[in-house]
Each structure stands twice: as structure tokens, then as C-alpha cells.
Image (cartoon, rainbow, N blue to C red; front, side, top):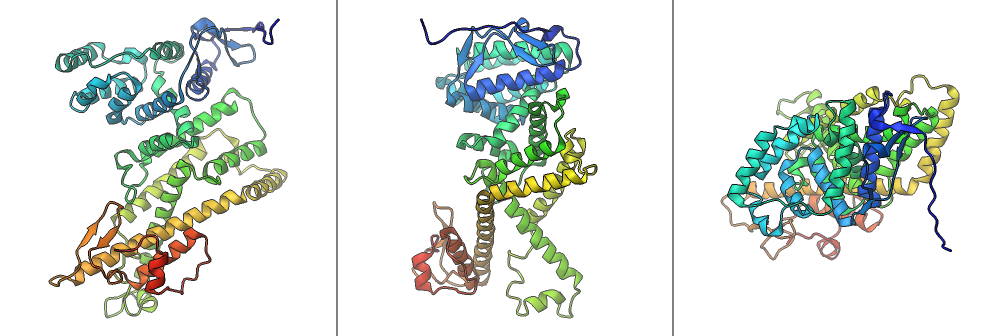
Length: 493
């Protein structure tokens, strides 16, 4: 006897590739998300998805038969594949060669040839044509062969096929074939976007967070102070996540849910993504970008209000003179609008338009509030209040992180303005040399640590330090230099 038994059951249906039903393309998308989930989440991949093993059941569902052949993928390989797919779907082909090295397609002994081998240009041609749809038929095979032969002549046999890849290739080539049989412009790379979007937005691992930064910032991902989300990339991500959510909910298959349930599920998704107690890669980026938007918008509004108030004979604005009669803040970066602010504001306008467009184009009834009944409004309001109360701890933590980021931005701007002011006023004088050390902060070589620090900067940095410690903040209480040296975590040196 044994504690485990194998059971089977008869499933009524027809082969997916031979079905004439109108939902076959939707079921192909569901199959793609299913296989990506197996490969990149569960780590156990069904390796025999020939057309006879993929059925459309009589009630319009997908059935996968014959689980006699499976392969397992390690967590490290799963994350590397996610990174690779993020680079492909966002057309970051410059990152692909390094992905191929990590995935085992390029031997370690050939790693030094990646940058100058011309492989980026070749792969950009292949993936670019493939992304356009039509499968392998859309790729100029003769051109690809000639390019690969040229690479081989220059660098020897640059590529190898890792053992695990044969099973993955078989699975996804069958899925692509079925997709092409129903849509001659089917693109398997584009079909990966919904799952990749969902995974990038919800995964909390550090490496996936890096892939998310690559996806939405592109080459500027490492310039944290100046990076602003790329609109086109965010549009890809939002559209992909929306498509995945619709597919997972069954809305595309006509499995309608009450609008109150849809709103509840949507609010859960938003709160899970942005108001979690533990800071996630997405939340870090969201807070950083939101703080920049608030900071830039505030400066822009203040500038507009000053200009509208009119100018005095002295040349200064009326409102600026009332608020700052001595002109102390007249040239401070805290209130002066710069090119980065304008770029941030323009991007914000584009993002607002994007979300409005997505709401209008979506088939999700959760976005259509114009036809809600009074009963639905009451039920939704009650549930939303309850959810906000249940998530109050995460919401408060997220708010505190945003406040700290805003204070950090203000302190950095004051430091920048103070540094530029010292440089401007000390031309021709013997002053301390300003250097940037390995911690990325500004220091002076003088032993007098108080010379280079203005009252505004000391105050802002002490407020930031108090917030980070969780102390009560008194804005008007500027500590002495001795107290500052003992408590300031980032002293100027």
C-alpha cells in the first residue's frame, strides 16, 4: 500500500489550435500567463504542451493535459529570466548580452567579448522584428544567419544552448504556433508583457526591483537625484498590468462580477502595491517620484503666484517682497524652478492623461462611476472606509516615508544652494576646498565644521534627523552646534 495514488478524470473539450470559437486568442493569453507563472513562480514547468494537450473545455476554460514531463527551475534562474524578459519587452537590448551570460547562453570564457562583439546590434534586429508580431516568419532569416556567421568569424563560437532551455523553448514555441494559427500578427514577446508587468510591480525581491528600475527609467536608472519615469515605459507597464488583471479576473471571457466586487478588488490591488507596511521596490520608486512631483509642483505654483501678484519698482514681485522682505530666499533652489522641475511637471501631466485614458479604454466596470446606484455608492463607501482603516498602519508608514523624502529633497536643495552661494561669494578669497567623498555627500577640508553650514541648512537637516528617529519635531528649535554635532547623522566635514 502507499499513501499516494494517481487519479485521472475525463475532460470534455476540443484542441485549442483547432477550435473555431472566438475566445481562442484570449485562452492563448491565459495559457501564456499560466506557463509564465509555472516557470517563474512555482518553478515547475509543464514540458509537453503539444496542441493535443491544450484543450478548450465546453464551458470556455483552458485545460492542460498530460503532466508526465516537467522541469524545475531554481529561484536564481527565475529572477534572471524575469530580468531578461523585462529587457526584451521594454526594448532595452543593450542589457541583453549580460542577460545571456547569466543565463548560460554565452560561456564565461567569452564574457570579455560581449561589449565589442556587435551582438547588441544583431539581437536588436532579431528581437525588434519578433516584437512586431508574425513569429519567426517576420524575421529575415538570411540576414540573421549572415550576421551570426560574421560574429562567429570574429569571435569564434560565441553562443551555447544551456540544457534547461530545450524544455522552455519547446513549451513556448507550441504556444506561439497556436497563437499564430488564430492571429498572423501574434507576438509572443508582447504576450509576455502582462505577466512581466504584474511581476515587476508586485515582486518584493531586490533584483526584481532593479529590473523594475531598468524598465521605467531606462539608462537613467542610477541617477537617483535626477531620474524621472519614462512616460512610454510607464504606459507599457500600466497597460500590461491592466491586461493581466483583466485576464486573471476572467472579465475577457465574460465572467462578469458585481461592480462593488470589482471596486473592492481594485482598491485591494492599489493598497497592496502602494500602502504596505514593509517598503517594497515599487513603493520606494513611487514615494521618490511623488516627492519630486510635489516639490516641483509647489515651486511652480509659488513662482506663478509671485508673477501674478505684480512687480514693484525694485524689480521684485509684490508677493515675494511681503513673504521674504530681505530677499534671503530670492535665489534659493528651494523656490527657484529649474529644468528638472519643468521635466517633472510635463511628465506628471502625461501620466495623468495616461491614467485617464486607461480608465476610459478599460472594459472594467470599476472605472465607470457615472451609473452607480445609491445602494452601490453606500456599499462601496463603507467597504473603502473599512479597508483604509484596516490598512491604517501601512498608510501611516507610507505617509511617513513620503514626508521623510520631501524633507530629504529640501535639505539637499538647501545644501546645494548653500554650496553654490559659498562658491559665488568666495571668488578671489582663500576658502576651504569642497570635495565629494565616497559617501556621496559634500565635505570641506577645514577643521571648522560650522563655517560651511547655513542656519537654514542646519535646521532642515535637524528636522530630517528627528523625523528619522521618530522624535517630535519643533521647527523653530534650531540646536546649538555642539548638539548638532552629536545628533546629526550626516555632518558636514
